Image (cartoon, rainbow, N blue to C red; front, side, top):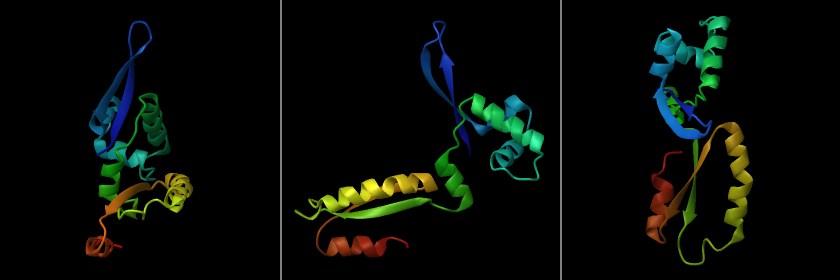
Length: 135
């Protein structure tokens, strides 16, 4: 399911916050099916170029932002990289971890991946953390 975010302006032109809406509402406002809007946003060629442009323009005008979690679920891809951080005393004190995160972050963002951190308790539990995660 896609979601879009629209900004509402008050009488003084000020921002009154965000209104969350679903792709259903975007589709309804365009007089199109949810499937057509979804496929247009994903740039499927079975949707005409004119319709794709119309949907993209309406989504942009409304401040549309797809729901990343829903998109990942639909595609069967997590698009998440998890870094396991040791929590034993003195193990995370090394600046290497922060430097590594700072260096990797922009590359993951550019590629459309989220970076998550997972704390690993010391000892046997730390090893289990590494072994229990899918590759």
